Amino acid sequence: SREIALEKSLLSLYRFYERRSWFQEGLVVFGRAAASLEASFDSASQITGRKAVILGLLVSQQGWYSHRLGLSEEAKTFLQKSLTILRPLGVRWELAKVLNELGVVTYRAGDYVGAKQLYEESLAVCRKLDERRELAVILSNLGNVCRALGEYEQAKEFLQESVGAFRERGDQYSMAVSLNNLGEVFRALDDHL
Image (cartoon, rainbow, N blue to C red; front, side, top):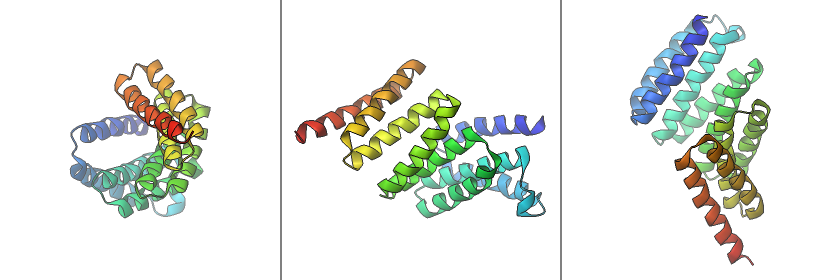
């Protein structure tokens, strides 16, 4: 259908702007698209179906680009709006993605407990999907937030699992980042013995 094709092209367009660090441009483009799509609904109660999923993704990308531009409050607002749209739709991959992104924004704001809750919810959704790429990223994020909270044993478990998931995917760069973070956990554990 047209909606599925549009949704797939959105992910490509997201990657295009992300890889070029064109966050301001992406924010504008995704913002215009979201405003146009949102205007096509007569009321909030009509935001349903694949068009609603697309709107949720457009709004989440506005949130992510706002985050990348250092606009934390705007990022949080967009991502929370995206969750409000996506939660009732029962779309799991999209929900896991947005929960993880909101977790990153929350973590960077220094709310480690809040970030951990978002990552855990994202992880629970992702485990049901068996979506290895997103799972590995979420596990890595959970490991880092547990380390920040001083929960080193839990951090170690999450990071070890993320290393395995990245290795399985052949993602050497991300695996190296998780290994480095795991090394920091082992150093902290050694300091606490």
